Length: 476
Image (cartoon, rainbow, N blue to C red; front, top):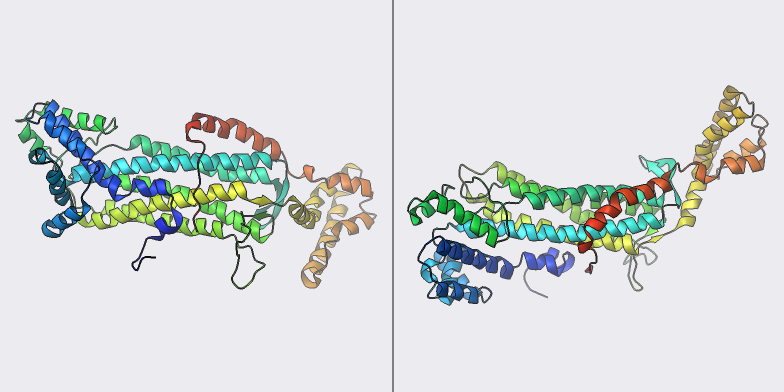
């Protein structure tokens, strides 16, 4: 173990792929790719840059001398210029044209946009797989009745699968916003110190058409169709806010799911995956705490709060830019993605590997069904010729008496026995059993679940089938 602090998002929660996207190697090699794109585009538009210089730059994209860069930064107090000089040392013939006409934000901001797009792609992959796993769960349990709750008080029954469709619907809404965010991301381009392109106008002798073409060429080389139409020195920090708002939405959905799982675990209706030698509590060996769902909730809380960071940054950018975003931005954006990576991996693990206990659910249903059935009993008895007001009063009397005994004495619910014995109802056991069939209380939950899966979920999965299939990395 290190003697220094290590970020738990890397050591405990996020997978290797997301960590790699925000790694130093990927960041600084992307800087070098942007410098190459700039040099190539400038050459294509007539500047005196040779093929040999560009070839030399391409030979040294990945062999980054971090020790040398650290020395330069200690001297220059400027991270971009430290890497310009480090790259120049590796490419002596290209050194005079590296970063030609550019400002620091050319590599810094454009790289941030590129990394966010790549990270959103990974989030989408995990999100699609979470939707798939939840849809398999919903389909498997679409016919299994369970007690539903409003205000966490017993309400009409639903099915396990129908409840899962509520989780899936939230994820589908999140997926729409991920796609919107990916589609709307634009490269900053190369607009210079205050966004006027003045340095490039100077390089190209005032030829505005070439300066405009330069941005388009760079964007194409970096895989973007669009650039920001206008900017100061930086791209608008609202882009960071929009992206982290999408991640916050995913965190909200996952936290809701995790909260439901924690409640169901308390009622012993659902268990998370639990390994053979896993310990639920250091003191109480019998416990099986829903620790993965608790971890989802914990990380989700972090992401939701983290979304305030770019909001504050976007609101306090002075005129054409200020640097008080830099330290915050390099922490808040990557960490939001790392946390979401851990959240979605856990989501998939819990919904795929958890255990459902229909017999426990049935027992809970039977505890509450007598009260829920009273309206059906009253309607049945009225149809047989009974007096609606008299039957209503009989139900009220028995319900009050039973509730009092349950709460004060801990007695079992004998409401149905009382109704069966009361001549005002005139019911036989066979008639009562027919009324109490749980299928009479779940509406069209099974059909609704199947219609939702067929009409909404499966088309989305088919459209995004290239994203399906993922190795989930669950850490400590």
